[in-house]
Image 1 (cartoon, rainbow, N blue to C red):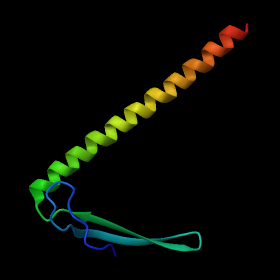
Image 2 (cartoon, rainbow, N blue to C red; image 1 turned 30 degrees about the vertical axis):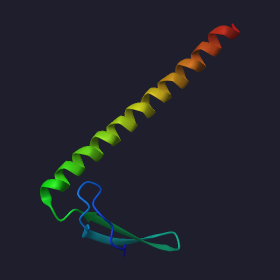
Image 3 (cartoon, one colour; image 1 turned 60 degrees about the vertical axis):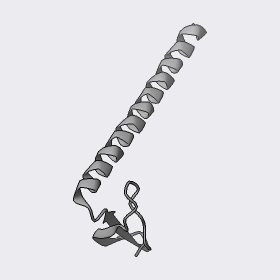
Image 4 (spheres, one colour; image 1 turned 90 degrees about the vertical axis):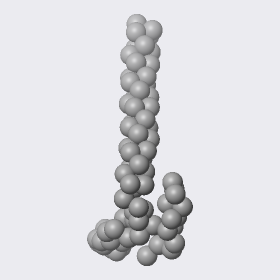
Length: 79
């Protein structure tokens, strides 16, 4: 189990919301989902994390599109 991890927004000690284990190959992996004890704060944190994830996904998508476009441009130049 994790130690005392503070909330990234308010600093309160996070609590364990869900914990589960699964076997992956020969290893036992334990997952622990922690949340802020203040539900309103957790909603704000969830929204902030969602925005960050969407931004990272957009950057990744744009990067892939640029790579594909660069490949097409190289093929056109070779001809």
